Image 1 (cartoon, rainbow, N blue to C red):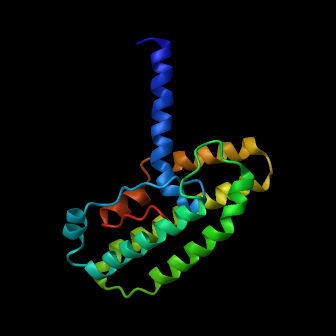
Image 2: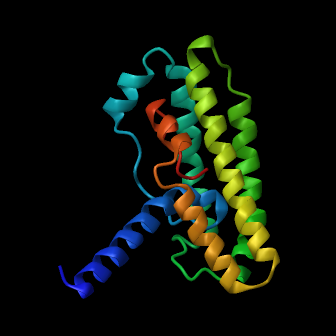
Image 3: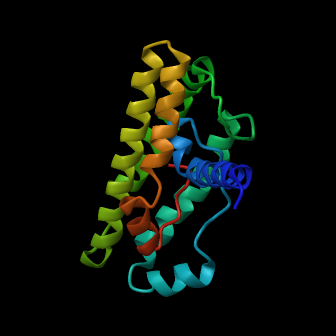
Amino acid sequence: MSMRTTEVMMATSRSIRVALVCALLVVTAAGCGDDTQPSPSTVAATTSARADYVTRVNELCSDLRPKVLEVYGGGGHPAPYPIKVFRSEQPQLTSLHQSFDAQVDALPTTDTDRRAVKALAAYRGASDAATATLAAAAATGKQDRFDAAYYKVHDMFDNNPALNELNAAGIGCNAR
């Protein structure tokens, strides 16, 4: 394999990884959105015993997604992502996510829902940590530091256990 082919493959791999992680980072204002949701048959098969909680969380996530995309002007933010844009979007995104979290927290749960509740809590924690990482980098006012944090956050979500567990629990929530 030539050096150029290797470079192209590495760049393509990073681009794919960034695109995949973007869907997870809508809450961080670094997301690009993604239509990936568990298929109806997967959700039905994995939620039969906990249909109420998981189904309602997925409905809330589906309701949240277009609102988040509206904040982004209908799209996402490929790199470079200006600090000024990040800062301008955060108040709206924070409000949307706080409302979503309050609605989810108000849902009734049963013992059967424990795995899904725990998975969503872990994912929310990872998502909040990603937002904090970007906010801290933005506070420096240095675009190069923010860019580095942006990629660090993307790397953080590569094969993220919290995301994997969330999906295994039957929840597809790329807007949070």
